[in-house]
Amino acid sequence: MRVLLLGAGGKVGAALGPRLAESGHEVTPVGRDDDWDPSGHDAAVDFTRPDAARANVERCLAAGLATVVGTTGLTADDLASIDSLARDRGVVCFAAPNFAIGAVLMMRLSALAAEHMPRAEIIELHHETKVDAPSGTAKATAKRLPGEVPIHSVRLPGLVAHQEVLFGGEGQLLTIRHDTFSREAFVPGVLLALERLPTLDPGLTVGLDALLD
Ligand code: NAP
Image (cartoon, rainbow, N blue to C red):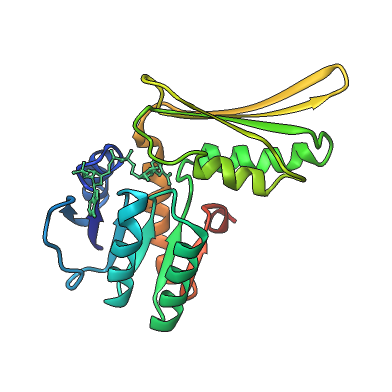
């Protein structure tokens, strides 16, 4: 595929670009101040910033380009607008708060644990330059659990992306934890999303879960 990679110079983009190329994709890298043109591509991938992603994605969709969104921190309004535009144009858009397969399993296992131990809290820990808090993964996990689940956000140097879901019961604690040690963790999920784009319905599909079954 000819892939427009928005945010190619960022921490995720820099890990993703070479791996997309190794997998046979032809990559057009785009940085913040670059002029870019969606035409001549088969898909776009956006790993930029919450305040840039909506405009980027809507520009791609308006041009008829199927788009994979990795950027987190988009508002419900942003996502509704993206969904509506994608449906109007008959174009596929796929977004996931976490492209690491292990994180998706963490969310699934947490939903299972909550059936038996409903009192839960989430601790999410990320590198100090992450712009949004709580993380998209923490919010997505909380949505799958009963009640209002408190989320605690930690931002420290040395961290990449980590999350613990703690389930408390009488005299016991169950902890489900996922650690991302490098941005390579997100590559297989993005490759899977690109491969599955042609099989998705027009509009916005959210979550890697939707592609795993
Ligand atoms: P980052 O290192 O800050 O990279 C973002 C890149 O986007 C920077 O190179 C930035 O350029 C560039 N950029 C900013 N505005 C742009 C624009 N309008 N058009 C094109 N490029 C633009 O951040 P990151 O750690 O790579 O993360 C990027 C996003 O992905 C964040 O929202 C993060 O939360 C999310 N993320 C998602 C997942 C997932 O699995 N879904 C995993 C990790 C991260 P400048 O440096 O010049 O501003």
